[in-house]
Length: 124
Image 1 (tube, one colour):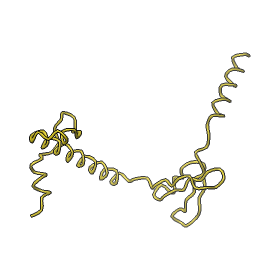
Image 2 (image 1 turned 180 degrees about the vertical axis):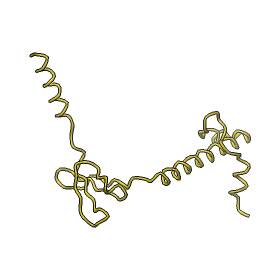
Image 3 (image 1 turned 90 degrees about the horizontal axis):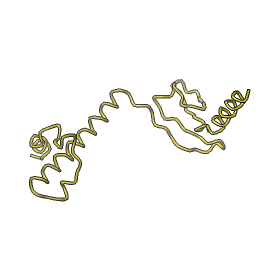
Image 4 (image 1 turned 90 degrees about the vertical axis):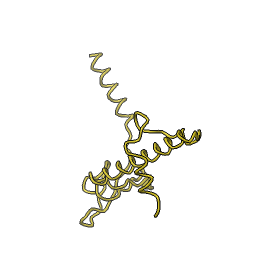
């Protein structure tokens, strides 16, 4: 019986520590206002407002990215990392100590040819 009481008390304490993140509201595709205590699946393609217990705006959750949007974002991050790596490689060849502090992808080499990138990005 003591074990059951201990388990009950531990469960009660754990539940007391869990606080609601807020009240999620949005206007769905049909124009109806939806409200929930968790993110609203019907509004995943639009922003959701998260309100506090008193109704004040805590934050705005952006729409969930589609797989294509996520792929575009990852490609942009890879391109930025490659550009930093090319700048770091150029700094090492010139002996520029400031540029050599940039981070490079694993192995210290960019995943693309820096010479091709610099020609493609230069005007003219």
